[in-house]
Structure formats: structure tokens, C-alpha cells
Length: 98
Image (cartoon, rainbow, N blue to C red; front, top):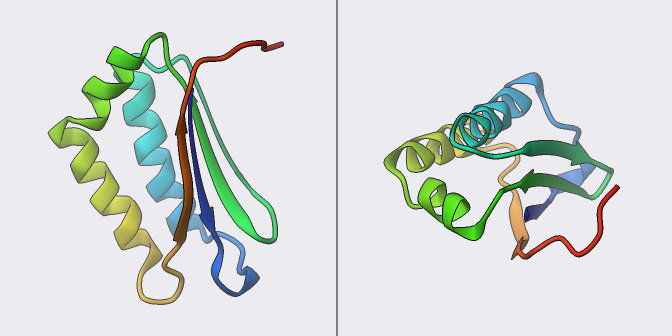
């Protein structure tokens, strides 16, 4: 599982463009072997979660050119108005799930 957390600037909600930028990443993840993805926000942060069959599959996506290109699109969708502050990236195995 990978969890990516960023702080939101000025408590602004995500725009449609920002959500679509993230969908590009989530679509890439699903096309490359990801099992499930989630994008969520509250008033303070944005959280993207992806579930992977193994660390090796995740690493192959994260180290790919396609991932780099999608990452550029995600960042471009933020523009100059709301650059997210990276809080946490967590890669770990799931111990319990329902």
C-alpha cells in the first residue's frame, strides 16, 4: 500500500482540474497492476492511497517514465495558486483490511 499525503494551502477545495490530474495517476496505477485506489480530502490535506500486489510492482510504476509524465501533469494542474506541501509518503504492507 502507498499513502501520499499533502497539506492544502489556505484550506481551498480541489478543483476539477486538480482532481482530473490525480485521476491520471490513479488510472496509470490501475493500468499497471494496482489493485485499488482512493483520493480523498478534508479541510487540511489531500490523501491518495493505492493498494499494490507487491512492492516490486509499485516500484516498477514509480520508476517508470509514464509515472514521471503523469506526476508532471498532476503538479501542472495545481498552477501557481495552490502548490501542495508534501507531508508523508508511506509504503508498507497491509496487516489487516476489510
